[in-house]
Image (cartoon, rainbow, N blue to C red):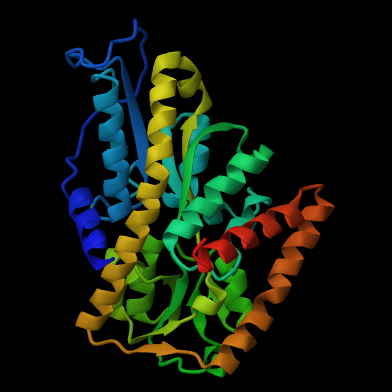
Length: 353
């Protein structure tokens, strides 16, 4: 497994950074193997809140490079990383309004805008990023949420189970009570259910909040401690995989941009999207492994709750699941069906099926 992860990391790290501008054109399709177009017909901007050094930004760049290669240079995608084009909470609206042609960010950053898909981030005990990513795409494909009707969905990806990284040792369930913990969207509800005080912050703002003591802890995937360097400003990590939540992330395209693309290019993009779903899931698991290695290098202790405390945590978050089902029913949404489908996918993954 480690060799596989290392190979994946090496492949992604080797991706070159491309350049481009925003705009569209039209021409006859080029046959596979034709010489690359001297000038791209379609130059698309892609807003990503991750920094360029993050493995998910590198995976996105690999996707963009594959699109360029497979369209023989007709499509060039210019990635604007680190929130330089639109900040994390504004990425989705920026795609809808045409500020960028493509965007990647978290559903959780615009809480309330995606009521059905809030199920994806529930504390269901996700075992890894690959499962979370598989589950998110399966739900979107099966239920076709109307809340995504104003964009063209490329794919969804989601990180591995969240951990609690703190400036104070948390060895028991009761130690969580009263801590100021960074959490967004559904993870904020998890924080509150576990007895903490949720503080809404995007990942780019969390490092300074931890360093200054504005927050005591962050509820996050372990990769964040290395990918965003937050491991430098925490003291210890507590495994909360029994109530492992995820944060699902969209990759979407402006509808007008999508509709201007010729059918042959649309087909190439769709095929590439399908290939990149597992790549993003694997990238999250590679990043998680690096996160564990990073905290080990920093000599931060990793605490595991007792079975009794894990049971307390599971009981504490149960009302979140019930609340989601009740709220979705009030809105006429199939929340119960979505939750059941997610639990089935996770159970099968945990059983190795």
